[in-house]
Amino acid sequence: MKSNSNRTNAIKGLIISNCIAFVIIGITKFAINKLLFINSGAGVLVFSEFIIIPILMGIICAWYWKGLQLKGRVSALYSCYNSFLAIFLSSVFLGEGIICLIIVSPLIFGFMCLGTFIGRKMFEVNNNELNVSIVAVLLLVFITDSITEHHYQNEVSDQIVINAPINKVWKNVVAFKRIKAQNTFWLFRIGMPSPIESTVEGRYVGAGRKCIFSNGYVFGEKIAVYDSLQNLTFDVINQPRDPEIMNHIDILRGQFLLKDNGNGTTTLTGNSWYKLYVFPVWYYDIWAQSITRNVHLRVMKHIKELSEN
Figure 1 (spheres, rainbow, N blue to C red):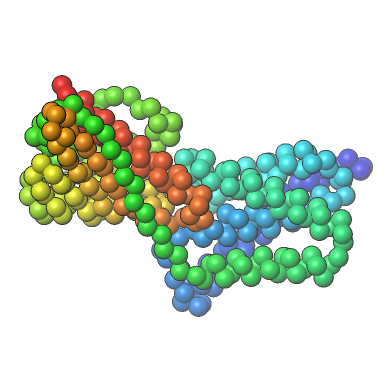
Figure 2 (tube, one colour):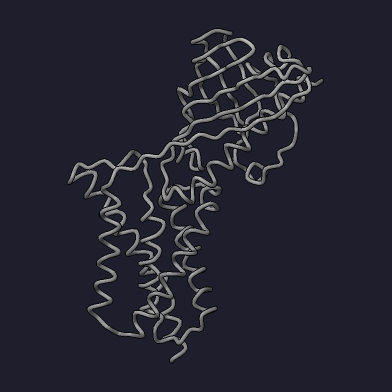
């Protein structure tokens, strides 16, 4: 009987913590958007959804698991189960893509595990006033964060030296033929769209440009600066919406700068500006920079190959 009761409490912790988390997020977003008319940003996912909510979920689980006398490793394992359940429910109800869920999983697991161990200590002390205060503070942080506006933009820059004269490199920068080389970046290899071709309507300021990705996505661009043999800058005027990371980042502008090294080689610099809609920045910007950098390098290495051949 005790074994069945323990199993029931373990399952209750998983189910109820997820239900409460979704209710808190749903009520908060409804109250902010519909009742208070506060807009913290279209499609913005604030840091509290990935930190405060998992900690609360861990504390709720710890309350249901307090009679199970779980060892630290087992508590971490149960937290891992709960993380997978939360991620699965996010994919079903929030429409998140596989790549996005892979990226978010370490954050969810880490803070849910932290919440579980915080909860264990809370319920060992068994001070109801302290416990209520901790939960109230976490909820207050979540609400405050949810009604606060969030803005973050960043730039990524990469360079490569090409063993070809600048005029030969320039023509491959403006537009390039289809990339046939296999992807080496692991996220591209498991399904994230990668750039494969670029086309241009004309070689002048205001001309349309398209960057085509491996899954058929097309980024619409407009040339903002056309300084022959030196600077090609383009604004991204439309981009696809997708369950993967492209739903949480906007690429604002791209740029290629060329420098004649005077010895028959050319230094090619690729710059991109983007805006993030997911927080905390200290975590997600690591991924954004890595993905942007690998997009740069895939295109720039292709330009190098075309120019040198």
